[in-house]
Amino acid sequence: MHGRIRTWGPGALVLLPTVLLLGYFVYGLIGWSVNTSLTDRHTARRGPAEYVGFENYVNLFGEDRFLNSLKNLGVLTVVFIVGTLVFGLLWALLLEKGVVGEGIFRSVFLFPMAISMIASGVVWGWLLNPSQGEEARGLNRLFGMVGMDFLQNAWWTGGSRWTTMAAIALPAIWQLSGYIMALFLAGFRGIPGELREAARVDGASEFKLYRHVLFPQLSPIALSALIILGHMSLKLFDLIYAITGPNQFRTEVPSVYMWNTLLRSDMAKAAAIAIVLLVVVAVLVVPYVAYTVKQESEE
Image (cartoon, rainbow, N blue to C red):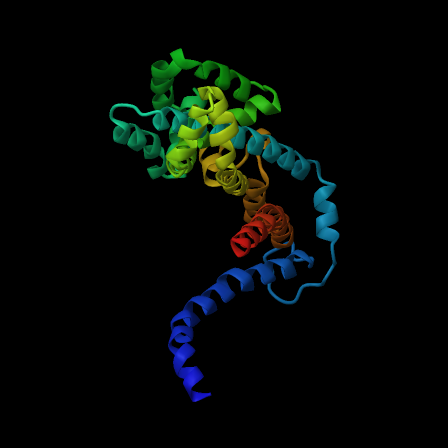
């Protein structure tokens, strides 16, 4: 017994602070949020609150504003994922074919990731909204030639939900396409050259080579990118808040609605929105983690 303690004891002591912090600040606060969402704590009052079961959730899904935020989130997620995957794969294909100064292009494509979402959102807010001051007017005069008027008019004068949320998704696509490019480029570089040579010897054209040989090898990376982007789209709070502010109903998503609700001290309702988002994230992430663990165990 003493020997076992000496074997695993030091490692357990090293991990103990991390386990305690995660247990409190992650799982403990998740439990607190679940508990709060089941009560009638709709103000910041102190003292015990009465349990109302799933009443807050029922009211939430019967509320037009919350349903509107879910629809906005769905459109934002689709546009963001499709746009980021398309541009990321396109850039990876261009670099995979080999270009002069590849390192420079990689740095240019990855540079937007180094910019904070808040800073990016402020600048894109100026670009998309010409009424926000002299900075916005100057930037719009500079970039008006590349089609920003289309997004401005559609967003701020009552365009469709798809056009409106596409304008919000555009900065996120610009910022994260480089990350997806790096994933796909690493996948291309990890494919053995023998596969390419064998396909060419068998008479495969470049199109068939990519379609039947290379792209199937990238399916695990594509799945990982899909899960990562889907997870990130659900948490795009800072970018949306910086672009539109807190009171834009047309661009409101659940995370922004949760923040606005919390500012009104409606703690139970805000906690219910947070748990709904947590469940949606879990639905995306848990099957992927289970699939990954299964694949690793089989290998």
